[in-house]
Every structure is written in C-alpha cells, then in structure tokens.
Image (spheres, rainbow, N blue to C red):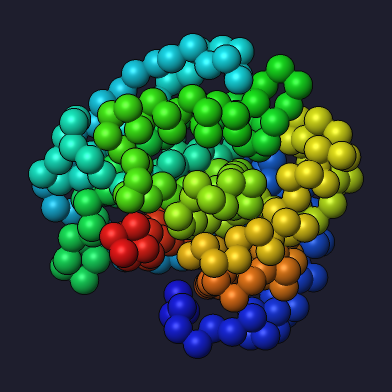
Amino acid sequence: MRDDEGFTRRRLLAAAAAGLGAIVAGGVGAAELVDHGVLPGKSLLDRLDGACSTPVPPLRFAPVGPTVSGRFRSRARRTTVGYAVAYPPGHGPGDALPLIVMLHGFGGDHRSSFAGMQPAQGCALLVDEKPLAPMAMVTVDGGGGYWNPHPGDDPMGMVMDELIPLCQAMGLGNPPRGIATMGISMGGYGALLFAERFPERISAVAAISPAIWTSYDQARQANAGAYASAADFAACDAVTHARALSGIPVRVASGDSDPFHPGVVAFAEASPPSVQVVVGSGCHTGNFFTAQEVPSMAFLSAHLAA
C-alpha cells in the first residue's frame, strides 16, 4: 500500500491510466454485481493477475466498548430500520462523543457495514500501538438505493433527519463534537454524497472503494435501482458536485484494479485540495476494504479530535 504523503493528483491519474484498459474490459457494472454476489464469478475477479491479493496488516485492539442496537420506524424510508451504536473503549451510553455515520455497501445492512471486524472493534483500533481518539459509530439499514432519495424511499433523509437526531439525543455528534461519514463501496459513495449535500453538518469523510459511476447509463445498466432517473443521477453525482467538499477533510482510498477506479479518477480530477485520494494495489475486495479501514479510522480520529 502506498503512503498518502506525496501522492499527487498527477501521479494518481498516471497510475489509473496504466490499468484502465483491464478495468473497462471487465465491465464496470458487471463487476460491481459480481463483487456483491448478484452474478457468479467473484473468485475469478479476485484472481486477476494477483492484483487482488491485498495483504491485511495485523489488527490490534484496545478492550472493545459496548454496542447498543435498536429499531425505529422511518418516515423517510417508509419502513422499520435497524441500527447499532458502537462505543469506544472506556465509554458507553450517555457519554458525549463525536459520531461516525458508517454506511453499508450494496446488499448489506447495519450488521454488515464494516469489513473484517465489528464497528466496536473499529472504534478500538490501535494504530502504531496508540488508541484512536474516542469516537462512537452508528450503522443503519439503508436499503439498496445507493443512499440517494427515491420515490417512497429516502435513505438520505432517514440518516440526516431521523438517525442523526436520534444519536444526538444520546449525546453523540452534538456541537462542538463533529459528525463524520464513512462507507465502503455503495456506502463510500453515500459518505461523499452526504458531505456534498450537507457540508455544514459533516466534519470529515472517509470513503473506501466508493462506487462512483461516471454516467447514468452506466449506473442503470449495472443496477437499475441505483437512481430513479437521469435527473436524480445528475443531482446526486459525486463527481459533478465534488467542489462542495471544499474545506472538508476527505480521504478516499481506491484499488488500482477496482472496477470503480475510473469513477474515483474522475472524482479526483474534480475535487478541491482538501480531498486526499489514495491509490493502492488492489481490487474491490474484502482484504482491500479491511486494510484501508485502519488508516481511514486514523484519519477521522485526527480530524474529529481537532
């Protein structure tokens, strides 16, 4: 995995160009569905020239804090959703803490938002043998609509207008303590989208392998339910609205053999200087996700503790 320091946007684009042909040949949309088990062939994707054999560093944790789970009836989603709040070591319900809103990937729910560990373990990570700043994390059921509003199902409204106020009533994410968004794949896209739409409410973002489409036709071909219309895609296009992230600390990590990497390249080109894009060797796989959770949590820790 390459270091964040000194990785300029020009180097990012050069690295992307080298592997772009293989990515496009595989079909971005098809690969996304393969990776989530909708189509067969994930093991074949994982073996592409060894590009997907991302090593996972040894994970070390402080004593893990408690997790509190619940359900609420969402007006925005018109259904009952599950959620879970994970606390950092030494903390529990009633403590005032910064909040990470962790968004799950396609086909997931609040129980499968993190890769390779549980959210409470993520809050308890030791980085260079040092604990993270105390932060709580909430996960929630967002459905399969790519975290953007759909007729009759608005996961964005659910998070911003229902989940976050629920957490704030618990003492989490209230000023001056910040709120960060984080996610993997579909959730990584959602983490960026929420910050673009609500820059005044989101203090920092960490997106791992974000599922960024480069056109509505591409998204519709791969997943007809991702956006309700071309107009909705335009309104929620992470690339078009990347300048809204100006001044917000943002870390985006992508594997150079990830089928969504062209979208990340387009996003990097459009992004303001506050956005940090990290490219490493890897694919859209669990090992890459887990490896990037460690520096992503460290990034959020540094900025939410500031």
